[in-house]
Length: 96
Image (cartoon, rainbow, N blue to C red; front, side, top):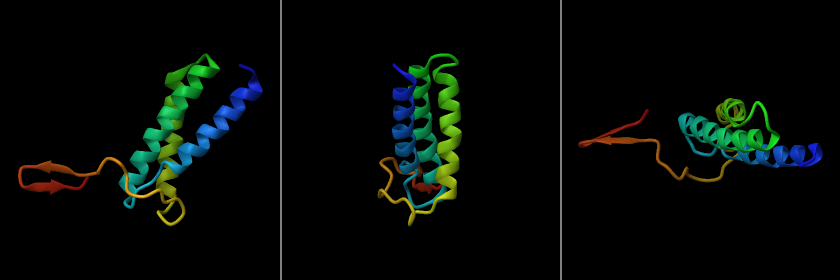
């Protein structure tokens, strides 16, 4: 893969990571952005070679989390996240 192709893949995957910070609450947006960024970074890191997927995932998670934190639902809104950000314990629902 040439450097130009790696750059194109990186730009496309980064744009997708930016859009992944969906949700209505800040925690949902940070978590979604970090998860998408980690996945994107791991793929790009694996394609690019050393230092590899681990560093790419760490950088991507940080970038995605920050993006999710600094954007509002009105700026980037893809709807409700696929996984709810709540935990049910008995009859109690916890919102982290």
